[in-house]
Structures are given as structure tokens and as C-alpha cells.
Length: 99
Image (cartoon, rainbow, N blue to C red; front, side):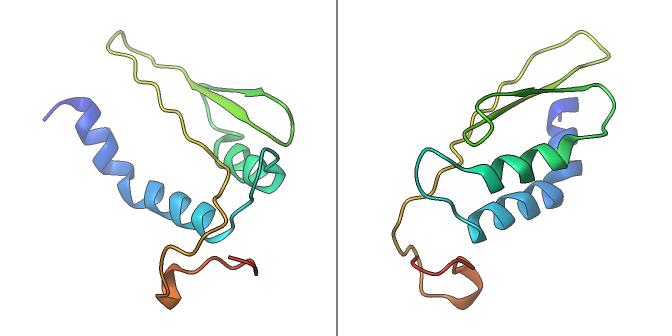
């Protein structure tokens, strides 16, 4: 197992929590101000993190600075939701009406 694999496993449950929160609070379209605020809040105050603001309602770039040389990993995620019903399971439904 590489150090990257171990780091991912160490944070897996927290990352799953982030994904579930975003999924249950969808924003449709190009403007996602609440999602941007949520993502930024998860990283604000952390050491070795640079937050670059895109358009305030549309995106954010998070640079996590590494203390050691090694491989660089990039993640990209769309934050907008599609206005469709993926599941009728009660623990999978968005909190917003209209989905």
C-alpha cells in the first residue's frame, strides 16, 4: 500500500460525509453559492492550504501543499446538480424540494 492509499483510507469516512452533504443539498445550474461556501468551509483554517476563489457562486480551487516531494494528484468535481430523481430511498433523497 502506498502512502497515498493510506492517506485516502484515513480520510475515507470524512470524504464520504462531504459527498453525502453535497448530494443532499443540490443546486442546479451554473451558480452554486451554498455548495461553494460548504466546500471552502471544509478547508478554511487548515495549514498548508491555499483557497483560490473563482466566481463566488460558481467555483473554488483548493491547493493542498505537500511537505515532501512525490506524486501530485488532481481532483476535479462538478458541483451542480441535475434535476432528476435517482432514487426513491428515503435516506438518498435531497433535502430541497423539486428533486
